[in-house]
Length: 454
Image (cartoon, rainbow, N blue to C red):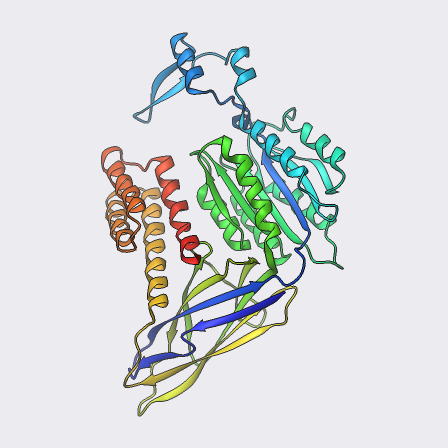
């Protein structure tokens, strides 16, 4: 495996001014797979709460329920919604799969694709969590299928405690970890609702990142905590996916296995040591997913980001916004501003020094850096808009969503700009964002990073 780090520009060029100045650095981290793919050690953490068991009726079945009085339209917070008036008839249940049924279909397909060196564990959770398949070799298919068969019959309580499922998942991954042979370690979390103890979930995600485990999240429908699921993915370098319909679960789970098999470099960490009064203002991951990141620090005080695994053909790009100290008086001068480093399980540490040249004739930013800055501004505006709406600041949220739409139009993302405008109109008319629209805006904005990578 090979790992590379490139900076654009190689060094900052800033004008001779007596105040701090903002500089942009675009980092590109690439990895090439030169040998065989890593074996996969992965866990699926499945929400087994009552909502995941509700039969998903077809349009024809739904019309039949309406005709027979089995469903009726009611107002919830002023919004018309359909609710079941009676239990779903048994003949409908037989022919209407639930979200859990789609998870079972996905897992049966995945079992056939596991190799002998792969490891898999299945955990279900609601109010409690249970290990259905302890960490097991991929060629022990009978044992894997037996665990999958127990998923639908579980009754784990009425509430949802994702933290307990995450804790069990990390413990099972540790059991299957092979210190002598690197593995691609993934924890895939699927849910359609809210959880107790979100702070505990964030702490577990940080622990996963420290252990080199990547968390990918699959959020189903319009009621899950997208802010939590995206945060869990971002802190560990994982992927966050929005599933509108349960029938897309098998494809999404298969895509996570494909991603794990495409890993070229494991558990990559980026660190930044700043000098001479420089300050990191913000860092945004531009690709493969567009999102602001919240770095931590190590014992030396250096800034640290867990970037997760780097897949072949999918470089990680980071935009650093660094406040450089005031220029010294006098003529042009060069100073050491920072040292950037990347490390992984399979490669030596790579370092690049970043210098700043204070000059009378600074060069303009290169087009790729300008494009990255435009995307970073768009995602920050989108975050501010949704936060304002969540806090009840209706007018601020409307104005910010309109600004988001303008930025997206400038980026050529007209369809996504229309989503932002639609949500601004929803705020004006109903005083709230639509559940599906807000999530589509969040996740589609994140996908702008995938387009940047292409």
